Length: 93
Image 1 (tube, rainbow, N blue to C red):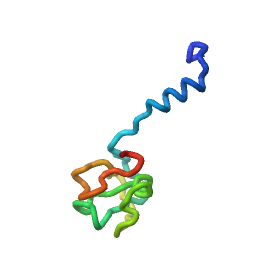
Image 2: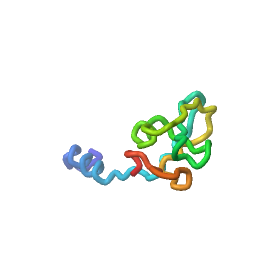
Image 3: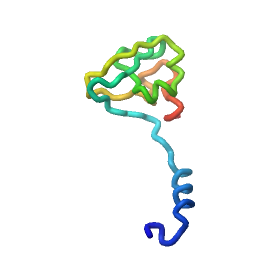
């Protein structure tokens, strides 16, 4: 009905191909959510990744610190000013 009698599966496939994830994550941390700081690449201790981006990044192979967020901060994945190297995870490349 919404696709004007077009095969809905082909419409979904076409939309999926057009999907382009943003280069910046920007996920806002909830209270108690884990965040990760890369000791090797972070420009300062406020530069953190959410768990989704951290697992898909090169930083997981570096020296890192896991912290519990107090809420309100956001994931810096994709922010080239926050990282000395590897600013993007595989999801936001």
